[in-house]
Image (cartoon, rainbow, N blue to C red; front, side, top):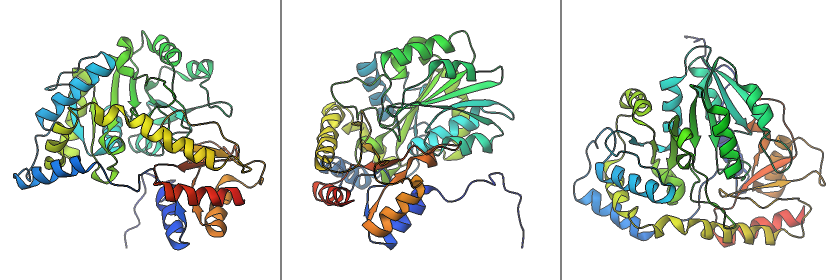
Length: 381
C-alpha cells in the first residue's frame, strides 16, 4: 500500500459535500450549496436539444465555439464598455472554478504571494498552495464586510504575484463600489501584479446598483483575468460552463495550461448559449428575479431572532445568530441540520485564519415553497 506525501495535507472534503451529505442523511431542507432547485429557461433547453440533434457532439474548438466568444465579446462591450477580441482574448471553460484554477496554475510560482480577500470562496487557497504559492489573507471588516484599503495596501510585498477579488461577493453577498475599484486601481498602478477577478454573480445585483466589473476600469483591465459563469446566470450549475477574458499576453499564458487541462468543453451547450446570449433580456432581468426571492426570504423571517443586512448581490443571504447561541458557527450549522432539518454553510470555513462572527450563509435560489418552509423553521428557533 503506497502512502503518498500529500501536496495538500490540510485539505479534506469540501464543506459543501460534507453539509450536503449531512442534509441528505437528516432529510433537511438544503439552503447550503449555491444552486437553484428549478430548471433553466425552456427556450435554452430547447436550443441545447437542437444542438445535440444537429451533431455538435464532438470536440469543440479549444478556445470555445467562435460564435459564443463573439457573443461574449459583444455582451461585455455593451455592458462595461471594454472590447475583448474573440479570437485571442476569450476562452470558454468548464465552469468558473476551472478558469480560476487554470489562472493560478498559469501564473503562480514557488514562493509567490497571492492576496485573497476573506471570507473567500474555498477554491482559491488550495490552488495557490498546490502551485507553491502563499496565500496572504486580508479580512473584510465589520458586519457589513467592508474592505480596509490601508490593510490591503500593507499586505502587498515584493513577492506579491497576484490579487484575487470577488464581486458580487460569495459568501457575504456584498458588492464592490466604484470607490472600491478606483482605490484598487490606484494601489495596483505601476506594479506588475496580476488581478484575478471572480465575477460569476455579475448579473445578480440588487437595489438598482450596477455591477462594477474590472472591465470598466482601464488600468485594472490591462492586468486582469475576469472569470464568469453561465451556470450561475442561467440556472444551470450542473452544466459547468463558464468563460474568462483577459488581454492577449495574459490569455496566451492561460491558454497554455487550459489546452492540457480540459482542452475544450461541452460543444452542444456552447452552440446553444451562442444563440441564447444574444438576447440581453436573458440576463439583464436576473437581478430583479433574485431580488424578489431575497425580499420574500427576509420578509418571511422578520419575526425571527436572526439579524441580517440585506444581500447586495449573489443569491446568498447571511444571517447573524448571536442572540440565539454562543456556539461556534460550525457547531450551530450542524445542530440546525440535525435538530431543525435546515442546512446552511458556516462562514468561518471561508477563512484561513480563526474566524467566527456567528454568521451562517443561506442560498435563496429556491422555489417559494422551499423558502416558505425554511422561514417557518428559522422563525421557530
